[in-house]
Every structure is written in structure tokens, then in C-alpha cells.
Length: 137
Image (tube, rainbow, N blue to C red):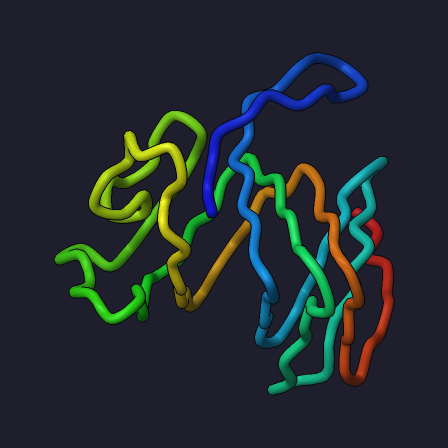
């Protein structure tokens, strides 16, 4: 499910996308945290799939971009590249009736995804072949 919400941050409130799901699969995970001139990366083993599962997953994101490769059983949009922000949510992402009180659950598949993330809450994260490193600027 997708909604746009306002969350508090240390500096100011921000509008973000809120995605909820039963599970999330991430191929070739590379989670980067940039601060103070260095980037810390949590990476999965090459070719592996990391999973968030075992309960409700909530992702608060400033933006999500990628190429959509699956949308339920429905037709894919003509332009399969997608950039989703709180101010630009494509109609096809909401489903047939975005004004309905409860949008239907949808199964979305993206490739080449980049997420500018504010917060991720969820159950168990499994990262096969996990490695952690730091790059100095």
C-alpha cells in the first residue's frame, strides 16, 4: 500500500512516501549511509537476494526510481521508467480508484531501483554474504 505522509526529522518535518508490504526482496543489496565525508556500505553477496519478511514492512522514502517490470496481472505503463516522489505519484501506482478509502493491494516488481530512504521498519532482514565497508572521501 502507498500513501504520502509527513514525518518529523531532526531538522524539519518532511513529506515522504510510505510503502507497506508483507515482504520485500532486494537483489544485490547495497545500502549506503553517507555522513561526514564517508560512505558506509552494507552489501549482500553478488547475485544474492536479501529479504525482509516475517511481519509488516514499512518503508518511508523521499523518492524511489527504477524500471517497472511487473504490476499485478495488469498492463505495464508505456513508459516503464518510474520516478516516484511525494509530489509525483503516477496514477497507475494507486490502482483504478485512488480516491477509494482502501486501495487494493498490488504486487509491484522493479529493477535497477534507487531509493532515497528516510526510514525502514520491519521484521527480520536476511542478507546473504553480508559485508560492511567504509569509503573515505
